[in-house]
Length: 209
Image (cartoon, rainbow, N blue to C red; front, side, top):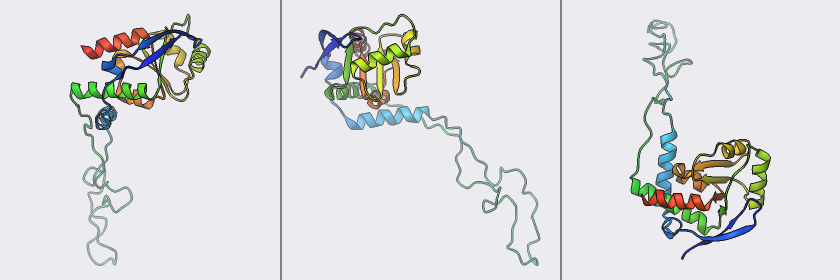
């Protein structure tokens, strides 16, 4: 079933009505694919540089602290035993690559599924155009309030717009992405998804390529 969404201006006045493309906003929502792609995104963000030193790597500890017998103390061979303060770390982390990849088909299905889920939830807003003369946090806040965008908002633009990007920098919970940078994690994280008709057309072309 096709989903129609009102197109509004920055004053939230209806100017048109647009049918969202079925191929993008009418896909099957598969939770396991969404989970897999989000897991991939978060894993690929990990630096994997955490490192600890074992007992053989910690500085010092080459000399036996006291003789084996006759002191009445527990035997010890090194002051860098993991049992000792400043000793080596047992089973600590070492640099590794956490990232992995899933197929392009799965990523595309997950992206369409995430967009469909937002459309079904009524969280998609279509803005006639989003153009500001100069960077203005106040003006951008007014636009978002007029649209009724509460919580986290994701603005999806057809291309880079430095004025819009600067205008949202000081607005908590608001993020700007281009169509090419759109991803499952940010879509699912947002409470409101704001696009333009041009952005919808570009999105359809990108996903059809």
